[in-house]
Image: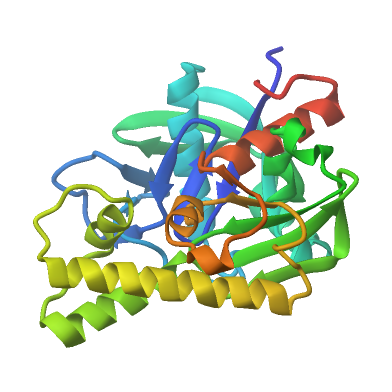
Length: 309
């Protein structure tokens, strides 16, 4: 009997991440088979194009079947990456913010686990039969930092996981999360991108896509005029200043202790910190798959395995 594959999945608002794959949370249902099966999930006779755009905000990810379908697509992509074959039993290692961990853990585990029966579906034209044998849940952010043990040598550090919709904050004291300091702020990257898009539309009369704005924020070469680039820079600095103020209002003094940044917005944050507001020490973990890798590592330790399936 084959050993179940431990598979970490980070169910973000803007993107789904496994240890080796990442794709936007967009999910569009088609009434009939699309002209191309690329990125198409076929499940129970229905067709879904995966990865185009992003999901509407769902504070409760178990309120619809969308994140379950995205989970199947993520499993298929990770199985292909690992060359594990289309038939497998997996143990899902997933996460929740510490702020809602106790409240949502039971519901989200049940949502992903279903009845443990084999699930048949097709992704990108390939047939899969997957059994989700177990679901283990872990705290987001903290799981990612545990992959970087050298960063926990400080007596106290701030962790800011900058996601699509939320920024999850915590303070880690002596390598353990301080639950009383955990906060979840609705100040994620989507807020920044929407503010930039609106300001450019008002000031320049043009409509830019999120992909264009993100590219400009990363400093990629583009044909944008200098006026639009200046708006992007100014709005990004305004967003970072707002976020730093919110972090301090939560009682987390980034001037007194190091701050670890991770998530999709981490690199943008570091690039646009006003000099007068710079934290005392800033560590950037720009691998967006770190939470998924951390979930796998913790699940593997619990089961006496290394977590790599």
